[in-house]
Every structure is written in C-alpha cells, then in structure tokens.
Image (tube, rainbow, N blue to C red; front, top):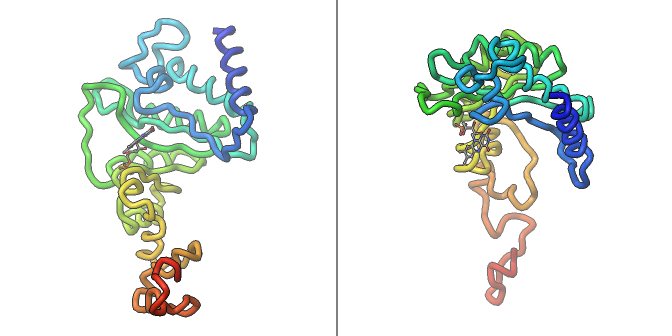
Length: 233
Ligand SMILES: Cc1cc2nc3c(=O)[nH]c(=O)nc-3n(C[C@H](O)[C@H](O)[C@H](O)COP(=O)(O)O)c2cc1C
C-alpha cells in the first residue's frame, strides 16, 4: 500500500493547497456505505490482509486517511468525521465498534464526530422515529472528548435544545428540516426566545414587529397617489 499512501498524501496536500480552497472545516466521510465505511464494516470488508479481519485491521485504512488529512489540514481548523454508528444489520458495524473508532479518532486529534447510521447494506432494518440516531451520539459522547453532532429527524427547536441540554450532543445537524424551511435557525431562535441580528431588510418580517405597520413603518416612505409600492421600497 506504500505507493497508494504516497498518492493519498499527495492528493490530500493538493486538496488543501488548491487555489480557491478556502473552506473553514472538513468532514471526512466514513458513513453511508462510502469507501471508508466499506473498510470499517465486516459486511463489506472481506480482505485477508492487514486491512481486513479484526476491528483493528478494518479501522486501519480510515485512520490512515484521517492522519493524512490531519497532517495536511491546518491544526487550528476543525477536522471531523461522519460515521454510520450502525449498519442496522446483525453481524455488521455496530455501536460498540463505532465507540472504539471514535476513541481512536479522538486520540489522533479529531475535532468532531457526526453520528449518522446505515447506508451500507440493503439488509438494513432501520428503526426510524424522532431523533432516532441521537442515542448513538449520546453513547459516543460519553466515551470521547471531541465534539459530537447528533443528526436524524431532529426537526423542532425545543427538541434540539433538549438534546443539547441533556448533554447527549454538542451540536445538532439538520437536513430535511432546513430544506423545508431555510430560515429554520431564525425560527428556532424565536421559539427559544433568543435575540439575533437579522439583515436589515428582514427585520420588519420578525414576529415581534407583526403588529407594526408594513409599508408605512417608521423610516419608510409613505406611499402617495403617484408612488407605486414597488418604487417606495
Ligand atoms: C436531499 C438530501 C441530500 C443528502 N445528501 C447527503 C450527502 O451528500 N452526504 C451525507 O452524508 N448525507 C446526506 N444526506 C443525509 C443528511 O445529511 C442527514 O444525515 C439525514 O437526512 C438525516 O437528517 P434529517 O432527518 O435532518 O434529514 C442528505 C439528505 C437529504 C434529504
């Protein structure tokens, strides 16, 4: 694997230094049946060399990739990993192995772990419900020092807040709720009574100003007979 490793390190360095690559954080994908997850899971990893078999061996390549990225990525910029905490298949990757992998990442300078699940096997039987992956995040959080992201059917601001306050996770990830409502964070802040700064053009839409005049709010021009609403805004 030596030549492959040299190429891996070169690719990581190229990625980190490529023009216009100005991202502030990297999340290394080890979930959802992608390559690094395939190395981790005993369902997909059938290798008989040093990269297959025992848990230690199956974690080897994902950890080598992590080390290569960590080495190329600035130490002061966050690097995290997304995992599938379970394959949802008997005999597959599971929470106990995820805890061991998370601890190995933690010891190597991983800043956060994003705890998802599934995506590797068509045999998976996922038990879906509100915050259904959060118990996995909580179990991993109890075993590591790095930050933990809970994700999966966390749609409500109070539900998200309760997870954080219970110490089950440090951050919440949202996908579908944000697609449905791109202003979810603003609406969550309002529901939780948190004051935020909004872009000026959005301020008048805030519920706290719902009872104020719309187009005639202070500071706006009062429409006259000859002034269309469009030209007055
Ligand atoms: C349209 C869509 C695209 C997604 N694409 C990705 C992806 O590229 N990589 C990934 O790790 N997860 C992806 N996901 C999964 C989400 O990141 C998230 O883990 C999952 O939807 C559960 O969270 P939710 O209940 O808040 O949607 C996607 C989800 C949706 C709905």
